[in-house]
Image (tube, rainbow, N blue to C red; front, top):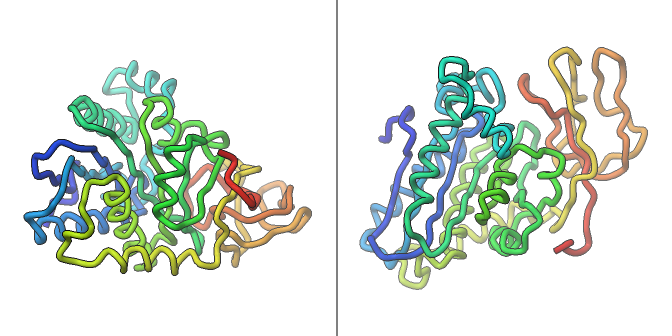
Length: 311
């Protein structure tokens, strides 16, 4: 078994030129389904060799320090450090002055930059996450058409404009680096189905990128399609973030129980409370990522259903 505390979970290539799929699991240390899914994928790749495979897939742990503690982060949220300004700020800090999660950023960036500097026909970054609330299956993309094309292969709802609400996550990094990519939310943290959803997302991304010849595989790809189609069958296709409720520890934020992702909410509905009193929903729409964990700077988001893609 791969040592949990090394950066690399696995790598696979046959030496044939092609694209790079760089996959991060556990940017949040309490979201381990991506790590488990990557282990399963690398085990299957090695067991199925030789494969009709081109390019290279690399899987890494995101925040090793937080994974050790099984918590979202140690001192600051690693998934809020990915803008060019934040990266530059952290790089300018003396090493001893960096927070634990900032040191994780520097190490992870070094790994990314080393791999991205090699010659590939294309590069895609897949960032694997889960949510504290149920029903959290969706792809987060920046408003770039190639990213929507990639997300369409995963069958799950496609979420637009989160990058505007959270300008420092990995989607921002993808845009500023000029690479394709998706942040994929696979369900609730400890739901075993989340691992299955992440594993399916990795295989379907490899297929969409043309890295595997699915017709030559010794195993069937249909179960991976079926897994995500079935899991998202009752969910909308396109959604857009219209509101973010930012919080801090001093707010003593408490989300009322029972809200799932994609739960319909109505303007004026009491949905949470904090030190100042009851919090009323500011817009009618769909609930997104209600906070049911102790760490986090986002109490909830509100999104609207789109009848067609904005791209």
